[in-house]
Image (tube, rainbow, N blue to C red; front, top):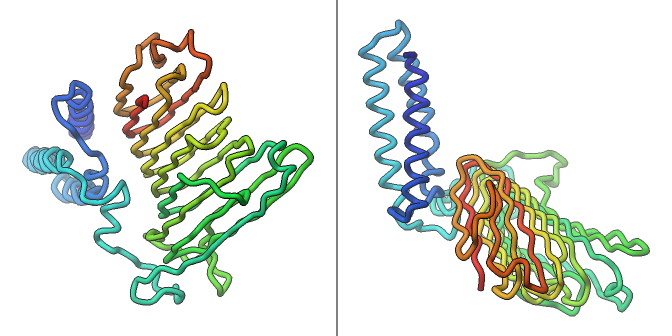
Length: 323
């Protein structure tokens, strides 16, 4: 058997065993702890190239032993309680930053910027679309505002912008972060994190939210708002969403890479989950599995309000619960 196949077999066995033990509630594993140690696998790859240039059996055994020791270390580390607030906690705690060209912040201080879009009486009759994106940013939403949209930004990296496009039936708000600098160049940053954004929206319009981020945190309590559709597309993200029951139907679509996703839905609303996941961990408390990839609450057929959730992810942790 080829050595490369043994390596991949051991890695898949490790991931599958952890997911199984976690689903059986034998262990509580935090993938965010493991994510911060990904450079270890580069080291293993280098050792493999050095020790196995001539197909040496001894080199293969040494490389395999190093891999097993590494996975054992990650197994122990993954069961420790995370010290940071989310998937970005590892980088925040280390205070890693290699973007030397940014001159706006000194001594790690955060700049404060306010954004606002006024509300008028005609807005309540329109569909309102919010496009929100930003990398290395912590977004929070739990308060309403008399304006159509407000955002309080504390940022260390990147520039934020807010634009509005008004149509006859739809208002579109786009709030995003750009890495454009004053010199007109895109200066790549290993960690453009440290940004904190408190978002507030008006409770009268019906909202469609399109949320996107490469890495970051979102904690949205949407129980006060009419959310018809929420779409999330993210990479290494920590997403917490709480859906309300102000509309008869709400759609939640989540697509992730390596992420932690927690969704709460009203206990009185019927909820159906459709999943298309790879090596994801799933915890759907109070749901009944109906078919391969389909889950429903016991009151799905009898409830007045419905929440439809679609989950599509790779090595992610998905949790859906009622409140």
